[in-house]
Length: 257
Image 1 (tube, helix red, strand yellow):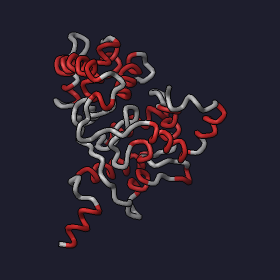
Image 2 (cartoon, rainbow, N blue to C red):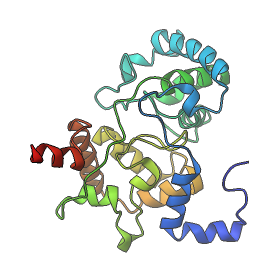
Image 3 (tube, rainbow, N blue to C red):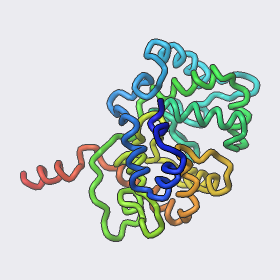
Image 4 (cartoon, rainbow, N blue to C red):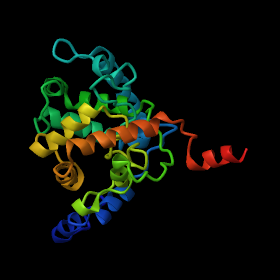
């Protein structure tokens, strides 16, 4: 049973009008990803043995594609799913999220000139295999203790506190304190290319990709400006440019030496 089934439609509608309880509910409804061991089994509803099996098939698709219509995933997303240029990282992203996106590309609920034909060229089983493979790869985004945002850090405030005057929840409430993603359905958003982030925000505004759990992303996107997205991208980039040990606690210890 999903964590939302016990809500009546009227209650659920009311919750959507109040971002704090919704965001907290979403964040608490899924187990946090294990950053040290981002295995398929920890992020996928597929049993561990089955996940290993389909991930192996997914690796073949990722590395070699499925000629002539499906190119190798690694040619755009990197040899280890780390992302390249304007193409987002896939490594360590939740199985449920990746599979949902491939299925959405395949049936045109999410529209993209590159990914649409590729997803259509894969069978449902092959899409699941590909999602299992990438979800089991190590991610570059680690959960770290993000310091409080500076007063002039627009991206930090949006990421950690939101902007309640516009009913914008903090990104951290669904995507983790460092944008590392939460569980299988809420993907990492740290280290995404700025152009890619802007394109996805626009896609939600235009209705050319599904709005996600409870439909919140379409509403959020329509309240974000290009400047907001650039500020968020810059914030997450600098946050992860620091060593994971460079937290306020470790900095205090260094200052005491």
